[in-house]
Image 1 (spheres, rainbow, N blue to C red):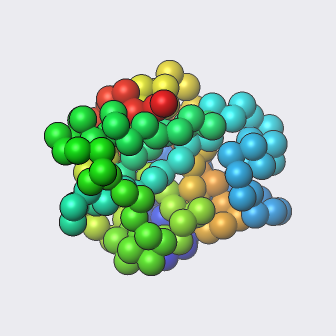
Image 2 (cartoon, rainbow, N blue to C red; image 1 turned 90 degrees about the vertical axis):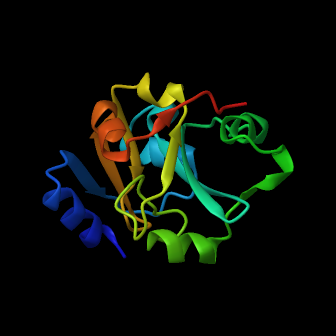
Length: 155
């Protein structure tokens, strides 16, 4: 899938978000923030974790790292059970390649967890469906579209 599929998802559900095409591929949060002229805390990351055979989408912002112990505790498993999903698995589940994946609009609906630091931002920018696209949206729209559980997940 790509940014056109994401735009169709936004249109079908009347989600007020805007896909921004960039002239470059932004490999890091810093690159994305610089290209968009925003703070690193406004860039969100959509990360897929596997816990046993169950996928979880975690939305975090900026340079913050996910604390696997906090994630494991929230889910009710031991820390060793929490692993990053491999890129091929992410593609199969979401339809998007790692590095372009939006926080919603995936092939399969994923249980979603969001760090509260994300909703302290008014506007955020996440994967836009292509490696050179970002999606801009208000955090209240993000929360409503993902139906995320807000829980402390950062280190």
